[in-house]
Image (cartoon, rainbow, N blue to C red; front, side):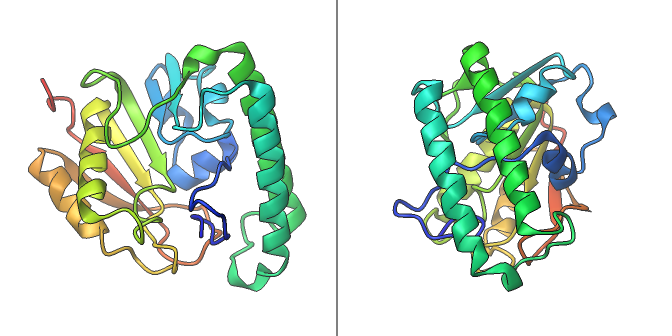
Length: 236
C-alpha cells in the first residue's frame, strides 16, 4: 500500500503534488516562504520546490529516487499516475473529494506537478538531492523551513518507532527555524501510534511542537500538521 492507499510492489510510490496542494497540506502562506531556505523531504515528483525556488531564497528537494535522467523519471511518473488513477476508479467512496471535486481534477493536479517537476529537474538538477532519511547530507540549520509528508506515520506498518524518531529529529536538525510534518494517519486512515513518540523525541531534542488543523482533505483520518519550532540550536 502507498500513503494514498494504493497497492504497489515495493511499498513506495513516486507521486507528487502541486505547489497549491502543498500550501493547503502544510497550511503555508506567502509569508511562510518569502526569503527562506526551504527543504522538501521526501520531494518526489512534486512542483513545490520548483515554485518555491522563485519565492524563497533557495529551495531543495530530497528523495532516494532522484538520480536518473529526466526522461527516465518521466516514464516513472506517467506509469505511476496512470496506475493511481486506475486504482482510484474503484475506491472513490473511500476518499474525501471536497478539495479536488472529482478524480479527473486530481489526475490533472498530478500531471501538472510532474510536468513542472520534470522541467525543473532537467534545468536545475542541483536542487534535487539523491538521499534518504534518517540521514541527510546537510549541515545543522541549513534550512529555514523543512516540509515533510507521506513518509513518516503513513508507512508505520514497515517503518518502526526508531526510524520515525530518528528521521523526525534529523529533519529538525537541518531545519534552522521550523519543521512541518503532514499526514499523521497510518495506511488504515487511523491516527498513527508513532505520532506521540515522535512528538516526545522532538521535545527531548529541545523543540516545541504544535498541532495545527489544515484545510487539505483527501484521505480520511487526522487533518492536522505538526509545526515544530525552536530547532535552531540543534547540532550547534
